[in-house]
Image (cartoon, rainbow, N blue to C red; front, side, top):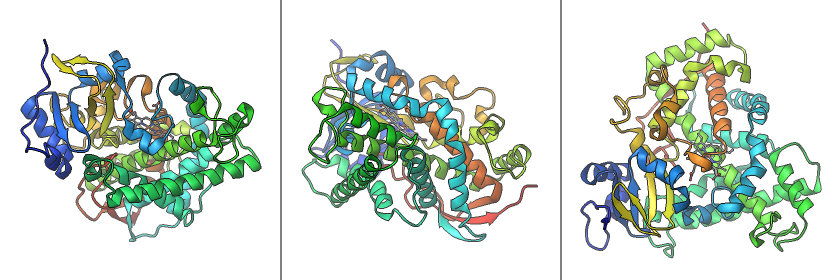
Length: 453
Ligand code: HEM
């Protein structure tokens, strides 16, 4: 008979809630050192959560035994029936419906717009100005998603309600909210509810506009066309029948869920990757020197194109390393659907199981000098060489559908901005993990113009 995984010591009633809410990453790291790579934490709002802190456990959950691990209901709260939240045949139908928009050819076709929107934003910058790096990166990646996938160019000063609501969706995932019972209406939960309502209303307007007007070649047009073709009405907005009835039909609610999912999953993760990459570039003169040298040699002052990307290897390694040291998705959550044995322990059906990506990415068993930002570590062998010890985009069939999109976007944005500016951080970086790996503040940077040498 196998035993339950061990638990770190905790206080009666509140279990590990206080340590977790105070310092989530430190709590996971310390607990793994005390208990090993499989341990149970007792968190008030969640109950028992089984943490995995070894790539072998990740492989079991994401690939080998993936049928034994389902989606966490945390996703459903925010994303309804969107791709991140659904399972089984509904997931397969949705994934294949979206896959075409993330094919290598499609992704390349988004490149010119990614660069144009980056230049539109940097044209507004002036030498010596101090800005929020996180704010600029988030505004830009939202503009890129809206334009490339939804066929809607946001005004750089407009779309305030949409921008605010997209940011506030994270409010559900503050550590204190996560550990308190669902029924407690914390201020961040109220903010989340308001954000969800606003975002859904905004996206509904976008769908109605598209349904009534011209269709383009973008993902939103394709979803609206699929709903027209499939017929019916979900009673919420005059559009066709619900995907939730078990058929392949697409309701307006289902389209909204998909748009919320893509908007959220597709912009703030990349904004975080850019924020951390620029922060590190601003802090490390040697890495910055190599980066600027590459841009000057490969681009010579011209805009980057997809054809340049294979020659921008230093830039690519900077992105790879930023995603290692600061994985935007610091934890991948699942729920065991049957009893599973991991590392000799029994994880009972129903147990929330969290893959501690941040912890593995910073573990000296898998990386030399793991806390140092060293893009050169990827010079001899790329991230594939690390197997399940490098999973910023997850792995297995549910790996990130937007991986190629995000990598191209991050390389093009870094290259476009890096040609014209050096970003000088004004404060030390601190992390404040929510659903994603957020910085504690808005990461102020001062802009310094540069010319290709
Ligand atoms: C640096 C940027 C990004 C990071 C770090 C990231 C990370 C992830 C991770 C870890 C997963 C797997 C979650 C799981 O297994 O539970 C995931 C899934 C997903 N991502 Fe991304 N992502 C990024 C960019 C994007 C972009 C640009 C898009 C869309 C435009 C996107 C859309 C999605 C979707 C829809 C899923 C669900 C896939 C499925 O379940 O089949 N992501 N992402």
